[in-house]
Image (cartoon, rainbow over all chains, first blue to last red; front, side, top):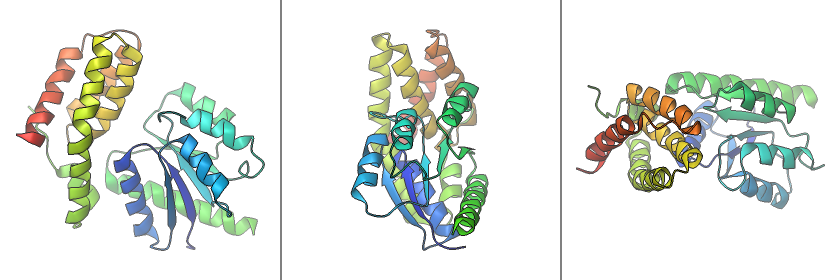
Length: 136
Length: 104
């Protein structure tokens, strides 16, 4: 699997640590960029002169939550085609519908057990690795 | 009665003691502020905000291996959003248990 450049948007420090650990276990060359909310993520997207392979975002975040972030992202020409996967503990149908209306590429419910979490992150990265190869 | 433990954190950390300590340090630093914020919002009857605080704290309850505590926090979070405070004291008991484990 080739290395991926991933932007992780999550206000929870431990979740960011856990995700980085899982990504590095899957492929040490994966590059993980972090933002603590939607606002910081947009700022990072505007600063950087290259695109991300994938954006992983939480929903519940201060200042700019996942929904506001998605809305802003999808109206920007530079970022609208970057796939976004929501990673959340929320399993409310209302939240899910709202996310899909904002054209997310996937929804990832965080399992409590790390072994299950690692399996899910592995499947997710493998899928997007294949999708990126197919689009080349 | 279930007690806080390191089972979940150890599962995430594997043999990486440094990683395990990083998680514990973050919990120790963030937990008091999150609890204060919850208590202030609850006292001011800002129940939706208090429910958001419970949501954040719930993650730490889960990391400390309190499965029943997580279930209680989830129920309390949902009830609080509707202004129902019946599980308040039960939730405080979980918080106290964690406080004793982390700082005593």
